[in-house]
Length: 206
Image (cartoon, rainbow, N blue to C red):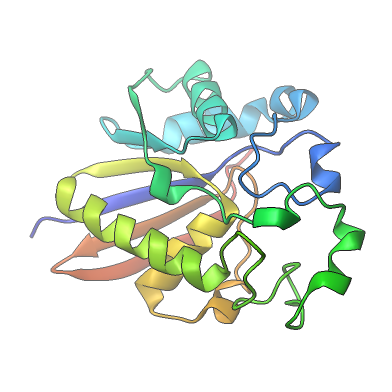
């Protein structure tokens, strides 16, 4: 049985000013003080992650920087391939808006744990349902391409929820109930054309 194991990590916390608005697929920097404060978490990830492994990041620098910081804390440096289909949810014309400016623009009710509902599509952007479809297609492709291997993916909260939703075959609003914190680890397994969720939102120890 050729199991493919996916180790999905949400990127580190972004800098404070970026957290004040909807940034989606904008390329915002990481929070430098937090990078230093969370050194034990990076060491924990470096010790926990499989060796060898295929490493993937998204086109946004915050995922590459997170991977490089894990390498700096004890994981042997690896090549970082870019996987565009695992990028964060695009919020289209709403990117750059302060959070307080969003509610009046919504056509559907906001979700309890996300600024938008699962089916809400921002102008020029994508809904969470779109993210699940996009990420699900990518995960199926990656499971075939890397059959029998360990694959570490540094990605985004929305994309990781999308991957888990695809594995569990759940709808977008249900997916948004899942917590995916910065630097958390989510593990998926693909075997015999089926998916299994091994863990969700594991936080590395201090």
